[in-house]
Amino acid sequence: MTAQIDGWLREIVRCPVCRGELVDGTSPDGAPELQCADDCEQAGQRRGYRIDDGIPVMLADEARVFSV
Image (cartoon, rainbow, N blue to C red; front, side, top):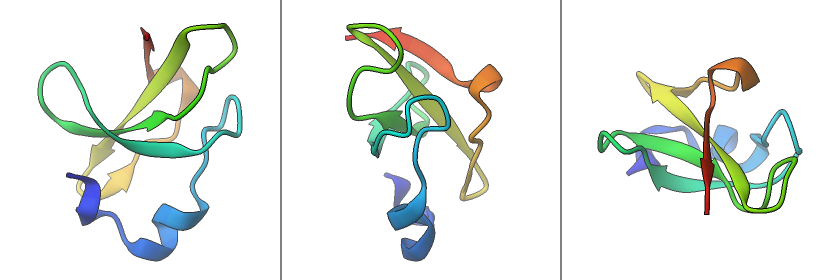
């Protein structure tokens, strides 16, 4: 789903909170997003970053926090 992001950007982008790898994901409303691959700050907690016009919004304050 996040193929709209340029490959070079996809390889270097990391979570600004935990510096972890980001993987393709889907938000509850069905929109593509990048999600932390591992726990972020607390056990079982991760963040999802929305994608606007092919650009991931990597602002921690605007990330969706969810539990796994």
